Length: 279
Picture (cartoon, rainbow, N blue to C red):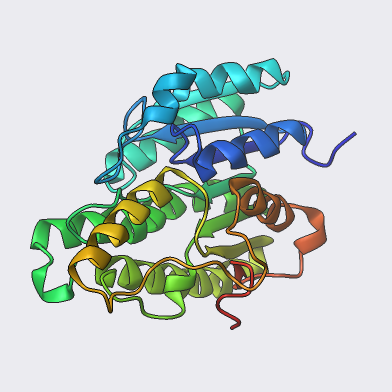
Protein backbone atom coordinates (compact mmCIF):
# COMPACT_ATOMS: atom_id res chain seq x y z
CA UNK A 1 0.00 0.00 0.00
CA UNK A 2 1.30 3.48 -0.94
CA UNK A 3 1.25 6.33 1.56
CA UNK A 4 -0.86 8.20 -1.01
CA UNK A 5 -3.68 5.63 -1.08
CA UNK A 6 -6.87 7.46 -0.13
CA UNK A 7 -5.19 10.87 -0.29
CA UNK A 8 -6.71 13.74 -2.27
CA UNK A 9 -4.42 15.96 -4.33
CA UNK A 10 -5.59 19.17 -6.01
CA UNK A 11 -3.45 20.34 -8.93
CA UNK A 12 -4.06 23.57 -10.84
CA UNK A 13 -3.12 24.16 -14.48
CA UNK A 14 -3.56 20.60 -15.74
CA UNK A 15 -5.10 20.73 -19.21
CA UNK A 16 -2.07 20.74 -21.53
CA UNK A 17 -0.87 17.40 -22.90
CA UNK A 18 2.83 18.07 -22.33
CA UNK A 19 2.42 20.24 -19.26
CA UNK A 20 3.79 19.82 -15.77
CA UNK A 21 0.24 19.76 -14.38
CA UNK A 22 -0.58 16.62 -16.32
CA UNK A 23 2.69 14.97 -15.30
CA UNK A 24 2.13 15.82 -11.63
CA UNK A 25 -1.47 14.57 -11.72
CA UNK A 26 -0.44 11.29 -13.35
CA UNK A 27 2.43 10.78 -10.91
CA UNK A 28 0.14 11.17 -7.90
CA UNK A 29 -2.46 8.88 -9.48
CA UNK A 30 0.14 6.20 -10.08
CA UNK A 31 1.19 6.58 -6.44
CA UNK A 32 -2.39 5.89 -5.31
CA UNK A 33 -3.94 9.33 -4.85
CA UNK A 34 -7.25 10.60 -6.18
CA UNK A 35 -6.94 13.86 -8.09
CA UNK A 36 -8.78 17.15 -8.47
CA UNK A 37 -7.50 18.69 -11.72
CA UNK A 38 -8.27 22.28 -12.66
CA UNK A 39 -7.57 24.76 -15.41
CA UNK A 40 -8.88 28.09 -16.66
CA UNK A 41 -10.39 26.34 -19.71
CA UNK A 42 -11.08 22.71 -20.58
CA UNK A 43 -8.19 22.77 -23.03
CA UNK A 44 -5.99 25.14 -21.06
CA UNK A 45 -4.39 28.16 -22.72
CA UNK A 46 -1.85 28.34 -25.51
CA UNK A 47 1.20 30.54 -25.45
CA UNK A 48 2.18 33.19 -27.94
CA UNK A 49 3.73 31.62 -31.08
CA UNK A 50 2.52 28.13 -30.12
CA UNK A 51 0.54 26.15 -32.67
CA UNK A 52 -0.37 23.19 -30.47
CA UNK A 53 0.12 20.70 -33.31
CA UNK A 54 1.21 17.90 -30.99
CA UNK A 55 -2.10 18.03 -29.10
CA UNK A 56 -4.03 18.12 -32.37
CA UNK A 57 -2.24 15.00 -33.58
CA UNK A 58 -2.92 13.29 -30.24
CA UNK A 59 -6.59 14.22 -30.30
CA UNK A 60 -6.00 15.70 -26.85
CA UNK A 61 -9.15 17.10 -25.22
CA UNK A 62 -7.60 18.76 -22.22
CA UNK A 63 -9.14 17.97 -18.84
CA UNK A 64 -11.44 15.41 -20.43
CA UNK A 65 -8.47 13.42 -21.75
CA UNK A 66 -6.60 13.76 -18.47
CA UNK A 67 -9.61 12.49 -16.52
CA UNK A 68 -9.77 9.41 -18.73
CA UNK A 69 -6.06 8.80 -18.21
CA UNK A 70 -6.33 9.02 -14.42
CA UNK A 71 -9.47 6.89 -14.30
CA UNK A 72 -7.59 4.32 -16.37
CA UNK A 73 -5.15 4.12 -13.48
CA UNK A 74 -8.04 3.27 -11.15
CA UNK A 75 -8.26 6.67 -9.53
CA UNK A 76 -11.22 8.91 -8.74
CA UNK A 77 -11.04 12.23 -10.56
CA UNK A 78 -12.79 15.59 -10.37
CA UNK A 79 -12.11 18.18 -13.07
CA UNK A 80 -12.97 21.84 -12.50
CA UNK A 81 -12.75 24.91 -14.72
CA UNK A 82 -12.07 28.37 -13.34
CA UNK A 83 -9.52 31.13 -12.86
CA UNK A 84 -7.18 30.84 -9.87
CA UNK A 85 -6.70 34.61 -9.89
CA UNK A 86 -10.36 35.10 -8.93
CA UNK A 87 -11.19 34.51 -5.28
CA UNK A 88 -14.64 33.13 -6.08
CA UNK A 89 -13.18 30.47 -8.38
CA UNK A 90 -10.37 29.54 -5.99
CA UNK A 91 -12.86 29.14 -3.15
CA UNK A 92 -15.19 27.13 -5.39
CA UNK A 93 -12.36 24.75 -6.31
CA UNK A 94 -11.76 23.98 -2.65
CA UNK A 95 -15.47 23.76 -1.78
CA UNK A 96 -16.22 21.43 -4.70
CA UNK A 97 -13.24 19.21 -3.89
CA UNK A 98 -14.33 18.93 -0.25
CA UNK A 99 -17.93 18.26 -1.25
CA UNK A 100 -16.80 15.42 -3.50
CA UNK A 101 -14.00 13.86 -1.47
CA UNK A 102 -14.29 15.28 2.06
CA UNK A 103 -10.61 16.17 2.34
CA UNK A 104 -7.64 17.77 0.57
CA UNK A 105 -4.24 16.47 1.58
CA UNK A 106 -2.06 18.19 -0.99
CA UNK A 107 -2.42 21.41 -2.98
CA UNK A 108 -0.10 21.90 -5.96
CA UNK A 109 -0.21 25.51 -7.20
CA UNK A 110 0.95 24.83 -10.74
CA UNK A 111 -1.21 27.19 -12.82
CA UNK A 112 0.73 29.87 -14.70
CA UNK A 113 -0.06 32.64 -17.13
CA UNK A 114 0.68 31.87 -20.79
CA UNK A 115 3.63 33.50 -22.51
CA UNK A 116 2.60 36.66 -24.31
CA UNK A 117 3.28 40.37 -24.41
CA UNK A 118 5.08 40.17 -21.06
CA UNK A 119 8.10 38.59 -22.79
CA UNK A 120 9.58 41.94 -23.80
CA UNK A 121 11.98 44.52 -22.44
CA UNK A 122 10.39 45.80 -19.25
CA UNK A 123 9.61 49.28 -20.58
CA UNK A 124 7.78 47.69 -23.52
CA UNK A 125 5.50 45.45 -21.42
CA UNK A 126 1.83 46.52 -21.50
CA UNK A 127 0.21 46.97 -18.11
CA UNK A 128 -2.44 44.33 -18.82
CA UNK A 129 0.25 41.78 -19.69
CA UNK A 130 2.06 42.55 -16.41
CA UNK A 131 -1.19 42.23 -14.46
CA UNK A 132 -2.07 38.87 -16.03
CA UNK A 133 1.27 37.31 -15.05
CA UNK A 134 1.24 38.65 -11.51
CA UNK A 135 -2.44 37.80 -11.02
CA UNK A 136 -2.17 34.17 -12.15
CA UNK A 137 1.29 33.24 -10.94
CA UNK A 138 1.43 35.08 -7.61
CA UNK A 139 -2.09 36.12 -6.65
CA UNK A 140 -3.45 32.75 -7.79
CA UNK A 141 -0.98 30.96 -5.50
CA UNK A 142 -2.10 33.19 -2.63
CA UNK A 143 -5.83 32.73 -3.29
CA UNK A 144 -5.68 28.95 -3.66
CA UNK A 145 -3.53 28.61 -0.54
CA UNK A 146 -5.76 30.95 1.46
CA UNK A 147 -8.80 28.91 0.46
CA UNK A 148 -7.36 25.53 1.47
CA UNK A 149 -5.49 26.49 4.64
CA UNK A 150 -8.53 26.58 6.98
CA UNK A 151 -9.34 22.99 6.01
CA UNK A 152 -5.75 21.86 6.55
CA UNK A 153 -5.64 23.68 9.89
CA UNK A 154 -8.78 21.85 11.01
CA UNK A 155 -7.10 18.52 10.24
CA UNK A 156 -3.68 19.45 11.59
CA UNK A 157 -1.89 18.34 8.45
CA UNK A 158 -1.34 19.19 4.81
CA UNK A 159 1.14 19.89 2.06
CA UNK A 160 1.23 22.99 -0.15
CA UNK A 161 3.58 22.87 -3.13
CA UNK A 162 4.10 26.05 -5.14
CA UNK A 163 5.53 26.25 -8.64
CA UNK A 164 8.25 28.90 -8.68
CA UNK A 165 11.20 28.97 -11.11
CA UNK A 166 14.93 29.48 -11.23
CA UNK A 167 13.87 32.90 -12.56
CA UNK A 168 12.59 33.45 -9.01
CA UNK A 169 16.20 33.29 -7.83
CA UNK A 170 17.98 35.09 -10.65
CA UNK A 171 16.51 37.89 -12.72
CA UNK A 172 15.99 37.11 -16.41
CA UNK A 173 15.97 39.65 -19.22
CA UNK A 174 12.70 39.99 -21.16
CA UNK A 175 10.89 38.18 -18.36
CA UNK A 176 10.44 41.00 -15.89
CA UNK A 177 6.85 40.19 -14.95
CA UNK A 178 7.55 36.45 -14.77
CA UNK A 179 10.69 37.00 -12.69
CA UNK A 180 8.86 39.30 -10.29
CA UNK A 181 6.00 36.82 -9.92
CA UNK A 182 8.31 33.91 -9.17
CA UNK A 183 10.44 35.85 -6.69
CA UNK A 184 7.10 36.61 -5.06
CA UNK A 185 6.09 32.94 -5.02
CA UNK A 186 9.31 32.02 -3.21
CA UNK A 187 8.77 34.77 -0.65
CA UNK A 188 5.16 33.72 -0.15
CA UNK A 189 6.30 30.12 0.29
CA UNK A 190 8.69 31.13 3.05
CA UNK A 191 6.11 33.27 4.85
CA UNK A 192 3.43 30.57 4.74
CA UNK A 193 5.92 27.94 5.86
CA UNK A 194 6.71 29.95 8.99
CA UNK A 195 3.05 30.53 9.75
CA UNK A 196 1.97 26.92 9.22
CA UNK A 197 4.90 24.82 10.46
CA UNK A 198 3.50 24.52 14.00
CA UNK A 199 0.23 23.19 12.58
CA UNK A 200 1.64 20.17 10.75
CA UNK A 201 1.49 21.83 7.33
CA UNK A 202 4.56 22.18 5.13
CA UNK A 203 4.95 24.63 2.25
CA UNK A 204 7.69 24.26 -0.36
CA UNK A 205 8.40 25.52 -3.86
CA UNK A 206 9.71 23.81 -6.98
CA UNK A 207 11.99 25.90 -9.21
CA UNK A 208 12.20 24.45 -12.71
CA UNK A 209 14.61 25.71 -15.30
CA UNK A 210 13.82 25.01 -18.93
CA UNK A 211 11.29 22.16 -19.20
CA UNK A 212 10.21 20.27 -22.32
CA UNK A 213 6.61 21.49 -22.38
CA UNK A 214 4.46 23.46 -24.80
CA UNK A 215 5.86 26.63 -23.25
CA UNK A 216 9.33 25.74 -24.52
CA UNK A 217 7.95 25.74 -28.07
CA UNK A 218 6.83 29.31 -27.55
CA UNK A 219 10.15 30.29 -25.98
CA UNK A 220 12.18 28.68 -28.76
CA UNK A 221 10.24 30.47 -31.49
CA UNK A 222 10.52 33.80 -29.68
CA UNK A 223 14.25 33.51 -29.06
CA UNK A 224 14.98 32.41 -32.64
CA UNK A 225 13.11 35.45 -33.92
CA UNK A 226 14.99 37.67 -31.48
CA UNK A 227 18.34 36.22 -32.55
CA UNK A 228 17.56 37.07 -36.16
CA UNK A 229 17.04 40.71 -35.16
CA UNK A 230 19.85 40.91 -32.61
CA UNK A 231 22.91 38.62 -32.96
CA UNK A 232 23.91 39.44 -29.37
CA UNK A 233 20.61 38.28 -27.88
CA UNK A 234 20.79 35.32 -25.42
CA UNK A 235 19.59 31.97 -26.71
CA UNK A 236 18.47 28.76 -25.02
CA UNK A 237 21.32 26.48 -24.07
CA UNK A 238 21.62 23.12 -22.36
CA UNK A 239 22.41 22.94 -18.62
CA UNK A 240 25.49 21.14 -17.27
CA UNK A 241 23.66 17.79 -17.26
CA UNK A 242 23.33 18.03 -21.03
CA UNK A 243 19.55 17.92 -21.24
CA UNK A 244 16.59 20.05 -20.33
CA UNK A 245 14.12 18.87 -17.71
CA UNK A 246 11.17 16.67 -18.51
CA UNK A 247 7.78 17.19 -16.84
CA UNK A 248 8.33 13.92 -14.97
CA UNK A 249 11.42 15.41 -13.30
CA UNK A 250 9.19 18.08 -11.80
CA UNK A 251 6.53 15.56 -10.82
CA UNK A 252 9.01 13.45 -8.85
CA UNK A 253 9.95 16.40 -6.66
CA UNK A 254 6.26 17.20 -6.10
CA UNK A 255 5.77 13.62 -4.87
CA UNK A 256 8.70 13.98 -2.50
CA UNK A 257 7.47 17.28 -1.05
CA UNK A 258 4.06 15.65 -0.51
CA UNK A 259 5.47 12.53 1.12
CA UNK A 260 6.27 11.63 4.70
CA UNK A 261 9.96 11.70 3.77
CA UNK A 262 9.85 15.50 3.63
CA UNK A 263 7.95 16.17 6.85
CA UNK A 264 10.89 18.14 8.29
CA UNK A 265 11.41 20.20 5.12
CA UNK A 266 9.46 23.43 4.75
CA UNK A 267 9.99 26.91 3.32
CA UNK A 268 12.40 25.57 0.71
CA UNK A 269 12.70 26.38 -3.00
CA UNK A 270 14.49 23.55 -4.79
CA UNK A 271 15.82 23.82 -8.32
CA UNK A 272 15.14 21.23 -11.02
CA UNK A 273 17.32 22.67 -13.78
CA UNK A 274 20.26 20.37 -14.40
CA UNK A 275 22.66 22.64 -12.52
CA UNK A 276 22.04 25.89 -14.39
CA UNK A 277 21.41 27.88 -11.20
CA UNK A 278 23.20 26.54 -8.15
CA UNK A 279 21.65 28.42 -5.25
